Image 1 (spheres, helix red, strand yellow):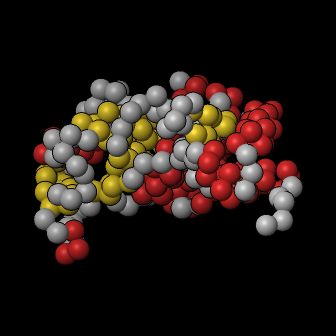
Image 2 (tube, rainbow, N blue to C red; image 1 turned 45 degrees about the horizontal axis):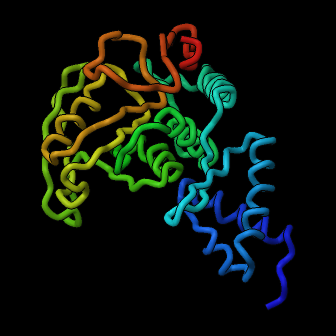
Image 3 (cartoon, rainbow, N blue to C red; image 1 turned 180 degrees about the horizontal axis):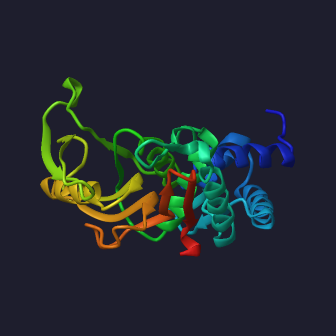
Length: 271
């Protein structure tokens, strides 16, 4: 095999790591690809580390020992988080996003691959020290950002449905009460979706009173699983007392003024 040049190795290694965030690759894996020594790969990784550090595009982390390796951590810095959430506020705070009933249209943001990916990175950054087994969400608008969060953290994603499907097999149904208007809704999940004793992270697009998150907590008890974190893109300022005690949000929504076509929204750092 023709000897691979350093710049080619660096390009390929970078591509592999960034396409598989938080997945550990052994140095032997790269040695087998390029037919070179571990010392050569280590030198390449040092160069990649410096590039990522200098341009603040995440970090390259190494794990020592026989079971060790290297992985890409794309999490945002505090400054990057501030910049991104400020941009989100500017995108949302436009008159044409207000729809009847005091709601805000965000589908184009949630289903934009680039924006939802960055939302996922931002949410993942809030839970970087939390140990869990699954990212869980409810259909449907929370799916894109939950999927991106799961991808960033290299965890499987589970979707709780409003109605079961034949392909779900045996399911557990649960009624829950929404915290905002006290309506009774149903959520369900296949018994095969989550293993007993698992820890889960709940990700959603919006929280008002926290009824859905409380429903997820109760549902996880049926699976003998533990909810260890709740993260949302946007939460309303009122009611101040939510049905869940601990959650993290990127944006706070204060008011939606339909008459003047204005949205009062700010990032978590500005609260």
